Amino acid sequence: MLHILFLILKIIGILILLLLGILVLSLCAVLFIPVKYEIKAETKGDIEQLSFHAKAVWFLNLFKAFVDYREKQFAWQVRLFWKRWNQDSDKKEDDDIEVEQLSEQEEEEKENIFEETSDTTTTSKSEENVSEQQKSKVKKKKQNIFQKFKCTIQKICDKIKQAWNIKEEIVGFLKEDTHQEAYGILKKEFKILLKHLRPRTLKGHLRFGMEDPYNTGRILAVLSALYPFYGEKIQIYPDFENQVLEGDIHVKGRMHLITMVTVFLRIFFNKEIRKTYQDYKTIKSEFMGGN
Image (tube, rainbow, N blue to C red):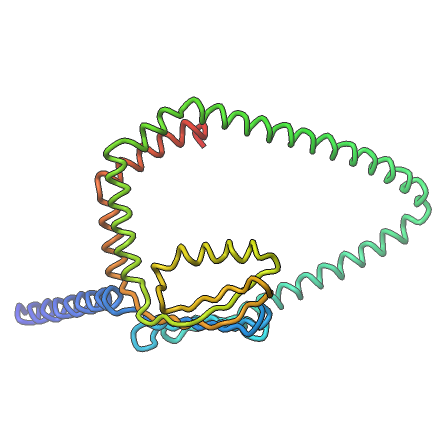
């Protein structure tokens, strides 16, 4: 009897260990197996000719997602193991909704026809009532618009007064050593995350121009500020004379969930960041009136 009991307990223990092993392996797979991503975009003269394709793959295609846009047609699909979701599923739901709406419209039309046939003798009186109601509605709308505008101006003035009253608190908040240290930690962690997410492959070229050369210059200034991220891997050619948008780009890389989780945990458990967040909530409650 005891031998059978020990055998049952042994089998149960083995099953529990197998389940724990599967859970550990699954967790390690999620955290350490990278998600590979790839982005391709191309345009040949203007935004109307834009084509775009992006995909993400994980763990031998057990998870796969893609987004595709070309010739003004948009398509997407997400697959997890054997389950798929795509734009066709949305279309089916939309078709069902349209059928329900059509049936509701038909019922409403029948009711309207019945009401029209039963109320033919009182059309003149109803028209007079409708005209009076429309006038009253227009008057009420004007009053509501004026009231909303007045309330909006009053709220803006109140916010400005509140901001002026707590100006010293905001300045002190920004200058406090704990908050500056928290900002430095966040900046450092953000750089680590960007470095991890930085693509392994990045190449392409872009030629662009707007109707107004001033707008072309503004876009060029923004792209110049982003130069440390793409460097010489993407060639940019501004055109100040023609309105044009042509080029191509190819981005390919990978990311590990363990890195993002580690960065998040370091931020979440950091004392300076938590203290800064609590102080921020206090100032926000004072400024926003508890909202």
